[in-house]
Image (cartoon, rainbow, N blue to C red):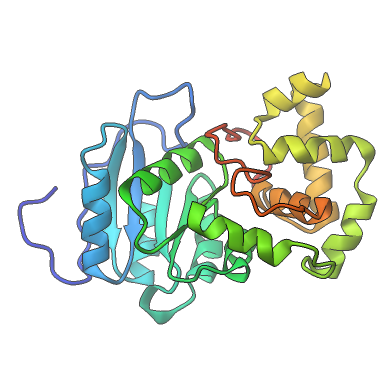
Length: 269
């Protein structure tokens, strides 16, 4: 952390790691998870920094309070995870999330939001976010979210989870028409993969579970994503919830928060 006081909106960069900029895996803890914090409220940035800076497996490499700063810093420091305010500078954090996902495929986005609604969570998923936490999140929950997302697990704040399930519960039209019709075109083998995705399994774990090669699993995923009109595993997990018409609002089902990883060489976006 720099010694000089930070002005409102000013970014403070931590030393960048010389290691590979690919996201940390469960078997690679030789370097910390690299974080970029993007929020237009300095008090929020400071709070997030304090929550993270004493953790040996986390490293804040940049902070910014603007959309332009988020894009430039992300390109420069190549973070593993961006903690992104959903209405940065009163703009759309979701669209910024989409841009970041396209610009830096190796980064994963956690949306920090005031909105505790199923619609907002679905918007986050549809633009490529891997996590959704509420403003005012406590330290334990934030650290859990960061580590889960770093391992590849889609994470929803426990306080927001029931709103997502309530918004999906029993709604035939919750998914766009092309996605609902796509579910009918998913092959039996692809349907076997869907629940495994929602459990956070890697391609290797799925291939072992279904006695398939890694390449075959990758091909199934690619074809399934095209059929469903989606871009990543988080979206597939949400559609799986819709398709199952869940009868419970439990925050521990379907969208795994157990810390299982599904990072790797799958077609993410």
